[in-house]
Length: 152
Image 1: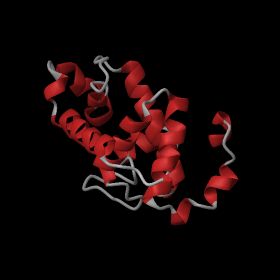
Image 2: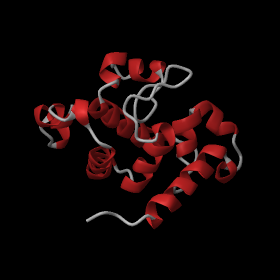
Image 3: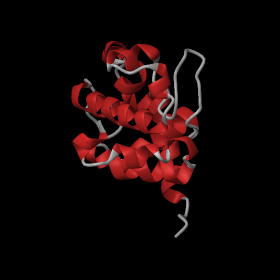
């Protein structure tokens, strides 16, 4: 999977079980451009979804950093156990963001996230995606991320 984008997955698997939020953030930032996703948007999505907790489990069975629903990870050929691995979760989360960006009826900077969050069918019914609660959460998280000083 990662080999397709030039990353040695054996190297990544060494870190999967002990990933810190800094390492998770770095991996998301490094990989997001490969999927044509703004790295800060990808980090904001993972932060809103799971607070960068790779062990997060949602009330509807969502798993991991990107809180991927069971029907979605199964559609892409993954198991729940595979989604519990943060490296796999990041990869599929970025693939899903890429798919949403490419196929969503809403084409604005952040509005494609309506499709990521609610799915394409519901997204078609949303007339003003800027007012969609998930978009507002992502904007708020982006403002926080971009205004927070980074350690060097």
